[in-house]
Image 1 (cartoon, chains in turn purple, brown, red, blue):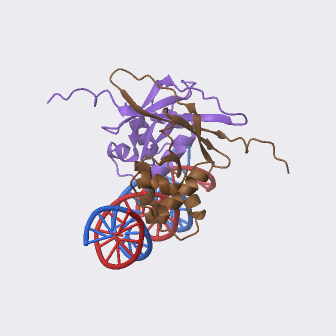
Image 2: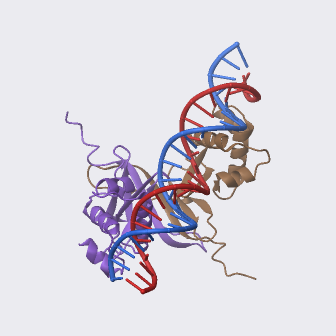
Image 3: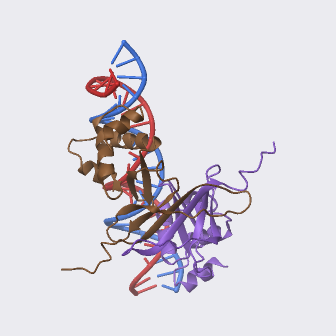
Amino acid sequence: MDPVEILNRHNLKRTSCREGIIGVVLKANQALSENEIRNRLTGNYDRTTFYRSFKTLVQHKIIHKIVIDNQLVKYAPDNSITHNFEHAHFYCNECHSVVCMDDIPVQKYVLPNGYSNDETEVLIKGTCGICSKPEIK
Amino acid sequence: MDPVEILNRHNLKRTSCREGIIGVVLKANQALSENEIRNRLTGNYDRTTFYRSFKTLVQHKIIHKIVIDNQLVKYAPDNSITHNFEHAHFYCNECHSVVCMDDIPVQKYVLPNGYSNDETEVLIKGTCGICSKPEIK
DNA sequence: CTGTGTGCAAACACTTTGCAGGTGT
DNA sequence: ACACCTGCAAAGTGTTTGCACACAG
């Protein structure tokens, strides 16, 4: 999927910052932090611009934001269009990677009377496949 | 349950800040932020001391920390002793209250091979019982 | 051309750290 | 008495805002 095409479809101006973020996030096999994304881009981008771009891209549901423990913020592609259920996120306590468990639908919790359930966030913490492998040194 | 007794049981020094926090958190029917807790106490407490007290109380599993969207941090009593399952948290989009759904056990998600699941955080966002009632003005 | 996006500086909020002095046990 | 806790100042971090300029459409 081409970043430019995505921007066009959302009637967003095609700027190198937005293009860059979308390109990097789509290519990654895990969620990335602002720093990780910036490091993978060549040009020098202002952090302010980054934050504003993230906000725009999140609003347009091009990417989504994942927050771990008030500390770590990462971004991943948003495929709420193709997947019509909410998905769980996994955080590795060892390598601190975050991945979307796109195939793990989240349970729909039943709440007490009068409560509405608009959105459910599920974060599973543990050790990822790579980190749990016995070290081969 | 008496704050002093709780501190004693954990071999923690009995200080007015710790006593105060425990007292307020136990009495509340919802999770409270640092500010909310401080406002409910009489004396003047330093924020630094508050943060350090929270850390201590969390480490001793007297209270637990709930983070909403990287923005809002609240604390609630920790009853992992009496409840031996993880519970979900509810966040009201209207009044921003946070409550522990102590009776809603979280599903144990099955992960791909090689992944371990140590801990699962569930945050349900919606409208709480009070806010969803038709306004009677 | 016009509205939107960018880059810079500064402000902000929350949290942590270092240190000296005070306090609980 | 002594370890631990507190309060203050200062630094750190992540994020937002205001403003002038640049640029995409």
